Image (tube, rainbow, N blue to C red):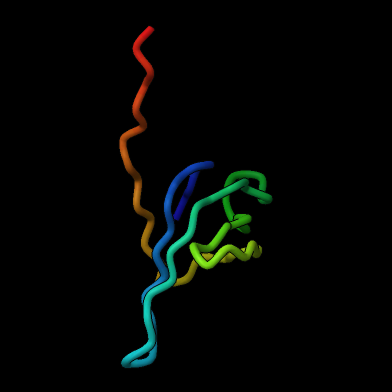
Length: 66
C-alpha cells in the first residue's frame, strides 16, 4: 500500500461488532512508504504500518478556479 499526504485510510475490524477506523495521512515517515503519520477521525495521531485489513481511499482533489 502506498499513500500520499491527504489520502484517507480505512482499517477494517478483525472482531465482529467492532467499528472500522478511518483517518487521513499527514506524512510518510518511510523513504517510499510506511510508516505513515495518520490523524484518525477521533482526533488522535499515530504512526501506522498498514496491514492486510487496511484499505486506501483516494479521492479526487478539487482545484480552485481563479
